[in-house]
Image (cartoon, rainbow, N blue to C red; front, side, top):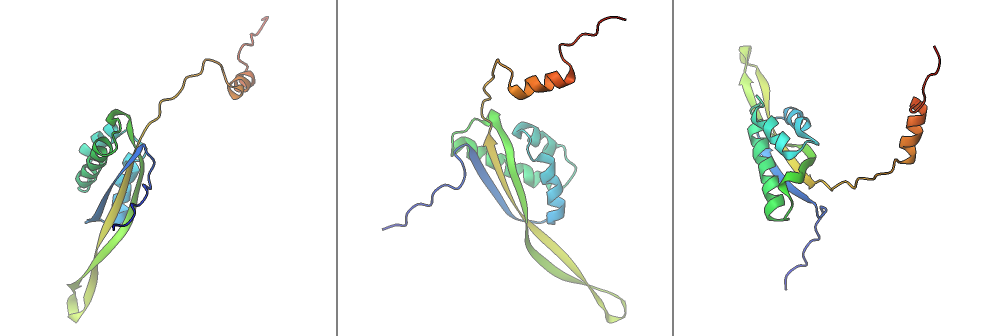
Length: 151
């Protein structure tokens, strides 16, 4: 007998990719994460392609992996994908020492990071012909439809 399968934690329109032990500090990786968070996948790939940061190459590979997971494993439309969530976590820290003068030493920390990236498929928006109540009220406040008369 085998164990029961674990239910899927993500929604049906989402796919995930993870990268562990990236050799960069979480603070520096967070800057790249903020660069692509919420963007269309095509635009995010272009931003990572031309980023001057060293770790952008690894983040680009992670994004391509998430897109491939969405397409092949979950049959999502690649053109509708966007970066829904990207989170950065702290990994292990290598500690080294640097010899200083007069027999002393100084510590050197070489941090690692983890990254989790979720892509989601955009839903098609239903266009409504009628104006909503809030749009009508906003138009009234702006004075839409009023004409000044006289000199």
